[in-house]
Image 1 (cartoon, rainbow, N blue to C red):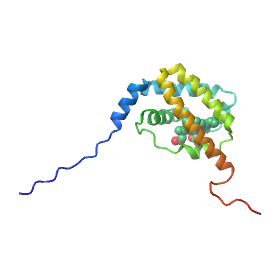
Image 2 (cartoon, helix red, strand yellow):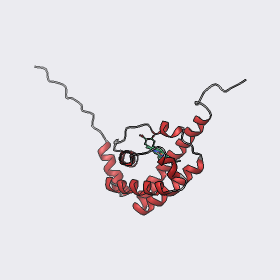
Image 3 (tube, protein in one colour):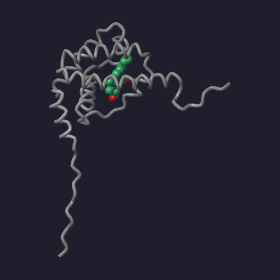
Image 4 (cartoon, rainbow, N blue to C red):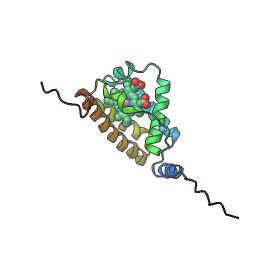
Length: 152
Ligand code: HEM
């Protein structure tokens, strides 16, 4: 009688990675929920950023839920967010000064909400993503990346 070969099940390392990140940063879903809600409270009240969001978001609840899932994925590697942020930002009427303002409010909120390690963790990631989104905005303003320049 032939013995069936043992089936190797791929085991996700994600829960262990998430647990390790939670321990190292003190971050968890309730904290990220508070961070996101407080941060967008400041954004909405901000003279520069507030109107840009107000013109595009009518219903804030789904946006806030999406942003908690986003931060859960980014900070804790939970894989909860499925989306494509770049196209949502590429055509916004913003330059680096808007991202600087966004980051100032984010850093402030992170320090108010999280442990020092947690704040450093989310701020470092926000800074990196802000730089990529800014490049996407610049590329959109100059035509698609790799597009043939206008030579006439
Ligand atoms: C100048 C600064 C920024 C402005 C004005 C801005 C504005 C917006 C607006 C208006 C939306 C809603 C878009 C829509 O539903 O049509 C949005 C979505 C979003 N933003 Fe930003 N944003 C900024 C920076 C950032 C940064 C730095 C991050 C990440 C660290 C970020 C992450 C996201 C994500 C994940 C979404 C949801 C995209 C989706 O629908 O899945 N944004 N943003």
